[in-house]
Image (cartoon, rainbow over all chains, first blue to last red; front, top):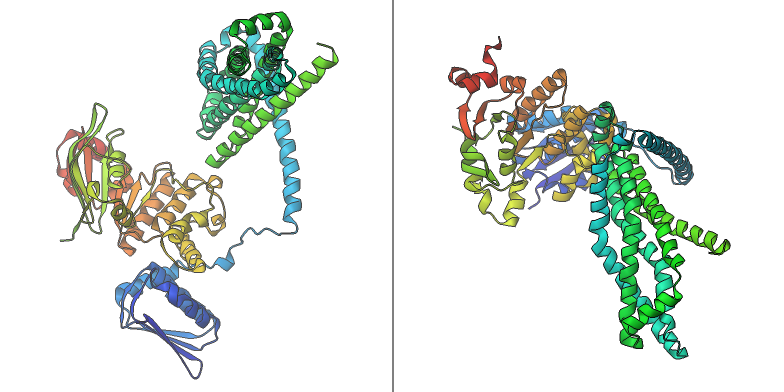
Length: 375
Length: 247
């Protein structure tokens, strides 16, 4: 049985009869009909509620809206058979009616909005760049201040960060580096065997690992692990006003939060890279033994003869720069967080993407420079 | 008289070795505005969280609308939860949605009403909660604390709940704003025939809004009843708490 009936009579009259319930669950089917009536110019609307047994706020609002629309069009509305409770609910709904058309909705113009967005993107990027410069300036300034007043440096926090971002990252760095060493050795073993140049696998693995791969792999893992953590930690502290609290107490957030993190990664990165060197080459050694029959002692002997110390040193030399980049980007993006929790996610993501990109770019730059000057 | 709608019986709560509630019992009747009072750290928010099934308790039982909440199935729980809504202390508005969407979301998820009507309902609830229409399309991070609370109240009212749980509704509001909010809650409770459970320690709320309340003191319910009864109840903690001798 339909819970609703509409009769359109002559002389611009319309009567509605509601049966049973008018609530959230029953409105869907009758809504289109109600809308149709709303748009027609009737002079008189009769609503018969004798058989209505329940009415919720949605229903009351629907009736209130309908009668309000009719009243605006100078038509009259007669409601019969409504219990006092329902009537008071309807009056309450009518009192709280708010027309959507009266509110300005921020609309996007599909032609103009791409231009606005592009412009906004550039302005935001420029602002972000300026903010980075001021952040960097402040960090450098505080760094020199701490150099002059070394007792202000947060040694404990730095040690804690070395443990968290360095020592605790060793298992995952080891696994990644080991697997990369393994895979490289596998792929090249086959090629080298074709030339009967088995022993050259030692040169290949060692030099590529020490000089390029281990530092890069370690830096990428640390970027994913620590840049995100730094951005999220500092971002959350910004939202919970911890940073403001620090500033108001005269604690400089750069000294308390940024410098320990930067120092921690600058110190930890070379150690991590050295560790990755060993594990990566070990991965290569295993493959050399199993598929090319080069024993461990042979591998090490050959390595000692052909691999110059400079390759290891170059790899280790790059590491602190990577650490500096990762920590600075992570902290900087954390400070950019404002307002909502959503922005933490946004800047955490940006921090990782930025950190990995700059590590790779910086690595390429160093490679070019070193090759040009002939090292 | 009126029916009991929430029945908490002998609830024990323990965090590790720390006992927070030691056999707490209380009853909330249909249509009343009930307050849970207590000092900081007395576990008043905890008991509220247990009622709304956000936290488990160690022993005892909580019965809401005739259902034991510790012994119901997942689907029953989902159905039961539609009967109440919660206003969290800091609003807990969804930060990725604007205010109108925040209020609409329960209606979009749980009903099949047409979109236009959902927006009408949401706008009406916002007006009811006293939020200016200029705030309709703003995001939560752009609102002040008081406006956030009003928007959160509108969201709590969206589904026409039977029971409304309020966690310190007036905290963080200025005295005038707090009084207005109190008046609003009282008005809405009468008009919409709500049962309201309020966790508070705001004296204005206690005096002007609550029908009945309980006071949690030293892990137990020290008192349950009306303000008039509380004034006659001779216990230093109650007198201290209500600061009745301030006049």
